[in-house]
Image 1 (spheres, rainbow, N blue to C red):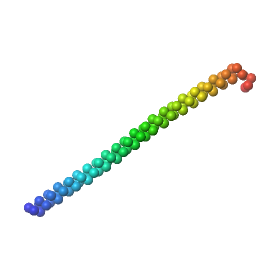
Image 2: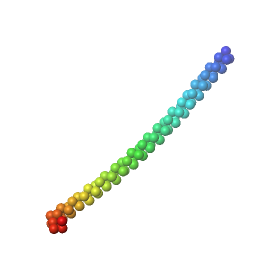
Image 3: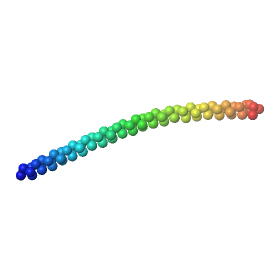
Length: 83
């Protein structure tokens, strides 16, 4: 009976070891997943900032084009002899 008891103890120890390995692997996966989500949040934040800057640049360009259009109309209407 001692050998059967030893085998059962070894099997239980092996299961505990496997369970421990799985627990460590799950913890490592969870940590990696949390790091990936954190990086994704950082990228999203940077993307939002870039979109704001781009929107400001488009607004400035739009105002500049509007001013140029007004000046061009003025030159065409009031000073046609320049052309």
